[in-house]
Amino acid sequence: MAKTKELSKDVRDKIVDLHKAGMGYKTIAKQLGCGNSSMSSDMYDAGYRSITNIDYSSVCIDTMSARHDATCPGMTWHQMDARQLSFTDASYDVVLEKGTLDAMLVEEKDPWKVSSETACLIDQVLREISRVLKPGGRFLSVTFAQPHFRKRLYARHDYGWSVCTRSYGDGFQYFLYVLTKGKELSPEDATLERRLLEEAQDPPNEVRTQEADTEAFLDCIDL
Ligand SMILES: C[S@@+](CC[C@H](N)C(=O)[O-])C[C@H]1O[C@@H](n2cnc3c(N)ncnc32)[C@H](O)[C@@H]1O
Image (cartoon, helix red, strand yellow):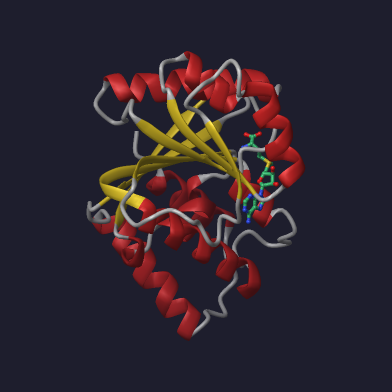
């Protein structure tokens, strides 16, 4: 799954499968940090006609709007910061991001210990996503980040959603996180959140072993 275009199409197919299995919606979606990817036009071709795209790069938004306005009526493009969305509360069925949170985390040296600046940035974005989601709405996050890194960011009672992880692709694996607004965290995810909050107050000084990491990783995958 080396090429971005192939990944977009593959993700589109997985989202359509989820929809058929009752885990998605066909009405309104929002792509966060759309960049210049074909993800939204692929989704459009699959029948998702009402898509709002945002990116904080105006160059990117102008280019994408010029490219798609004639062929994808109903799809809109907005220059906007994901930390401060100008949409009303509970207005979207689905929020989708692919690689946007990864871009925000790219400068981090240690994925186990995200700096407080980046943690704050990600928290602002996740709070905004949670705010604009309707009850029962879903945040779909596509990334190469494995559950033992990404669940640390998503498993929070404050966001008011449950976290479900799916993995796809052979060789070069990617992950689709499905966060459902209004559903409870699983007991394991609630325990993870509690542990992380305790560690933040009282950082452990033991050395992390590779075995422990592998166990934590396997515990986190819901297959
Ligand atoms: C790695 S690209 C991903 C693009 C696209 N989603 C894809 O699948 O290829 C990250 C995008 O996120 C955008 N971005 C980064 N921070 C943002 C923010 N705070 N608000 C909105 N967009 C942001 C960047 O401008 C860039 O276009």
